[in-house]
Image (spheres, rainbow, N blue to C red):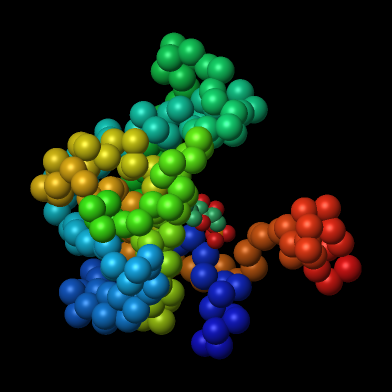
Length: 221
Ligand SMILES: Cc1cc2nc3c(=O)[nH]c(=O)nc-3n(C[C@H](O)[C@H](O)[C@H](O)COP(=O)(O)O)c2cc1C
């Protein structure tokens, strides 16, 4: 497939054929994904491949509270898990929301799960002293993560970048034996998608690009 077509059509696949994904396919994917950029070329990524049923089952209760709060906040008209606009909901209001276990299971029951961790002992976090949530550390791991999904596409496979296990990070680390300074970065369900979406919903360029200044003219206007 042509690169621009790939960029426009690589969607978040969560429904997969009941076919195994062999290690040989994962090896080809990761063999190409490893050429991703990272700060100082430190390549802080580590990947744990999960197929064990007991590990998948153990992930569900680690994700559930995060998604319960997500649902509660959405229902209340809030931006879920946002740091600029923190939740006004009480613990009781959050506990009353439904837990979307079916959505969580679509992810944890994929043919294979890749757990991606970033070694924080290597990452240069240039925004670590700013008075806001850090985003720069993630920039050393998510190009690699996205490369995995692009390479999976090239193998006729697909997946989704999910982060909803992050709030349960210490339990995820304990579950698969990861040391504490390896930050949980993504859980990628991978498999053969049941269908291929070709029309993704995204904002037009004019909505988010301005020339020279924040209040400058839109690019392309
Ligand atoms: C940083 C990030 C975090 C995400 N976290 C989750 C998640 O926790 N669970 C999930 O099901 N999807 C997750 N997604 C997938 C998004 O929902 C998906 O990329 C987006 O809705 C676009 O979907 P589309 O490409 O099919 O249009 C995440 C995506 C990104 C980039």
